[in-house]
Image 1 (cartoon, rainbow, N blue to C red):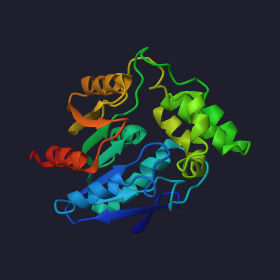
Image 2: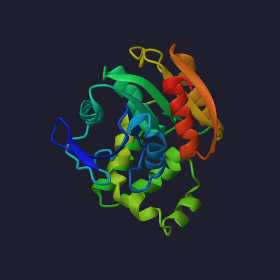
Image 3: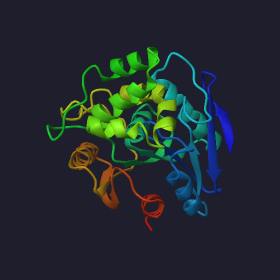
Image 4: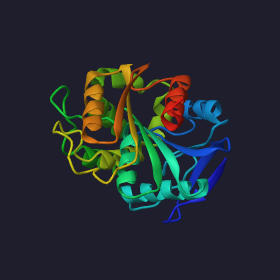
Length: 267
């Protein structure tokens, strides 16, 4: 484990495995090292060929935070890690972390290849769009001292779970660690912007991304996530779309490691 200091002084905590080509893994909303073991498991599987970084995004786990938030601060966090890794890196992102990685590449960070798993774009009417006031609702819940309500807004409006299911989840072991990072859910809402509105993806938003891009989706995932992955793949000239075994917006470490190894080296 180690830490790097971002441009605004935020301390970003990470784990690292191996000593090869740098590969940085970015979690999606609410996830961090203590609750997502797949990055660590994949890091162990890839350590002979890569130097794999898994980190806690700002405000989560063992990383600190600083106000005011801006998406650009997360670019700076990633830039600090890339600098620590040697100046350039392959970057992999889960869900909204994939969209963060995509934005960072478009902003000019020294990313050599970009692998993305199910960026949660809503590009048609196959599911309800994210409410226009989604981020404001999250911020209000946190400001009022109601982090659990922020998690509920996320689970119902963004993830799409029925309200009665979320009520039951409040009594489950997953709830306390999720509530502990509720203030960061709005960060991912800002990262997503209008890309969950049901409209087509903005054609010029990532025009600056010219590196190879791998866009993955699980074979058993929700149909709207497959549609979003296809839409991004169609939009980026350097993108390849890959369907991988996996359901429920995720996959296993061995499947992920094999896909990343093949993307990086072609074997």
